[in-house]
Image (cartoon, rainbow, N blue to C red):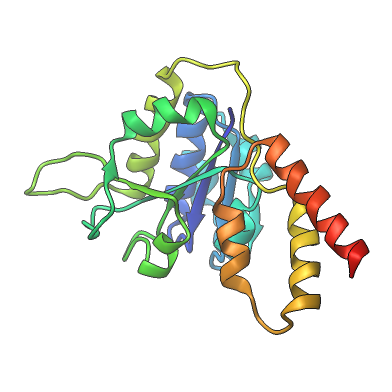
Length: 216
């Protein structure tokens, strides 16, 4: 399955150039930046470090929210060195092994403060790169490189894949909630976005919603 690299609020153009090169090294093509500095993607430093990966700088997508960046993904993994109560931290290798059967979004925070608690609440799991206690944090581009390497080496699985909540299903659920509940219901939508539904399960949900709409 494909992996999407998601960068939240990146600050450094050099890092984006180095990330593009790392992605090209290990066959990744799908990446999204969330709420970057408006001028960040036009800074010359990106091209200087994106050796033979200039096309990736042209294809990177810009969105305004993490929700939008991961909407069609079945497994969202946030990267952080912080230990969170009640949440295990997967290694890059463990992430790569499971990614064979998922539409993975691998989420990285900004260079200064990383992912916030709110960001991590939108992730199914968290992951960290084991490192020395004397210097546990890696540069953003270095961190992406480690995960890209592990994903490259992981064996592929061609069996049935979960597809997650489709845009069509999300639209139908939102319309139903608008009609029945009114008002904000973002928490319910986030639960469905994070659910790893199979294609058949998504189709069953859509059929049930249409039947309920007809009865109303």
